[in-house]
Image 1 (cartoon, rainbow, N blue to C red):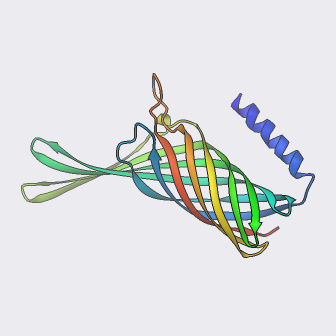
Image 2: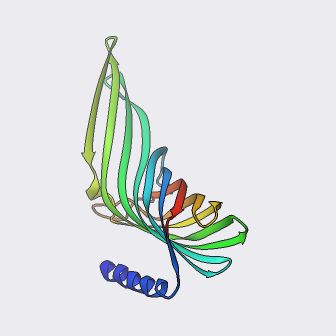
Image 3: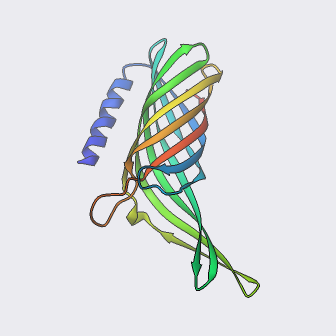
Amino acid sequence: MLKKIILAAAVAVSAVFAQSPVNVGGRAAVDMGTFWGNDVADAKWGLGFNAGVAAKMDFLPIISVVSGLEVDLRRVSDERTITQRGTEIKEESSLSMWYLDIPVMARFNLIPMFHADFGFVVGLNLAASKNIDRSATVLGRTVEESESVSVSEEVATFDAGLIAGLGVSVIPGKLDVDFRILLGLTSFDKPEEGDAADVKHMRLQLGATYWFL
């Protein structure tokens, strides 16, 4: 069913875009991510990146539709200290998740050179892994260990959220710089049984789009 919905949406978007001139460009962004939700304890921010292609179609002088296909690396870090047999162990972990994102936004060009974006994004998880670094001091000696494990089976395949952003055309018609806030609406967790934990993505992006067509 999900594949049919995505295919139908792609066909509909292609039909609409075929009726009007479309600008095509490449976009890259720095991505700062964390989690939010009722079941989030103390998630830290992690640094990732986003890159892909973008398309823009002008409906009116002040309204455009902007979409894209982007590969997104989302990282969320955490750190804690645990005690085992009287020894304090410092544990730092980083959750890295690869997504294929499809953003669709309405762009309002209300002020010359400046624009505001509002819309939604759907994402498909491609892979996920967790890196853990542990260190402890035992008898005056520091002991360290690291491990990396795949957690793809624990991450939900489908992700959806809202987008809001502000941008400026540094070179009108050629180069845009923007800041976006992306707020997840679905839990990233895929439980083995029962309900998923209320843990959703939240990201801040600072990016640039170069329109080459």
